Length: 149
Image 1 (cartoon, rainbow, N blue to C red):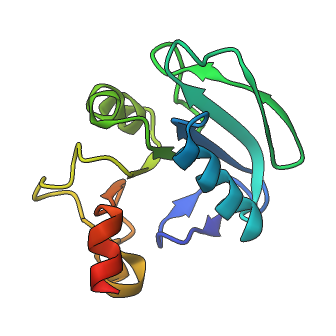
Image 2: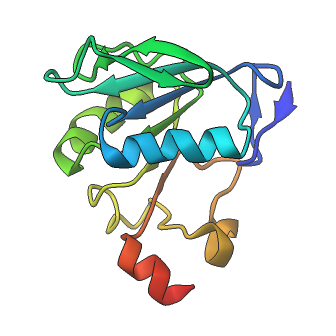
């Protein structure tokens, strides 16, 4: 078992993380992939996820092509980390399902920003809010991040 960046333990070895992005075909989802690639995040399997209109497309990421999965049909079991950026309605619908399946989640929508039990995190400012027990974290909007940095 290895220590994760969230302080918890995961059953996967280094370089074998299974990462999902809900909203993978959108501009923000593609930017998330770019950041993960640039930072050499250890991705063994990428699961691009999108709503029905983009499902079954192919996307390039992490050195290969991946089939986009339908957000409302996917089985989240086995996905270690899932980033959500497909809109608040999709997050409200699917984050509970992903949590039940054991995913650790960063939600980039407005869906959970005002929930008292969900840390609203800018890592450089209050990253310590994420503990070993944290399974869902939310991000403030981009304007707030820039103003606070």
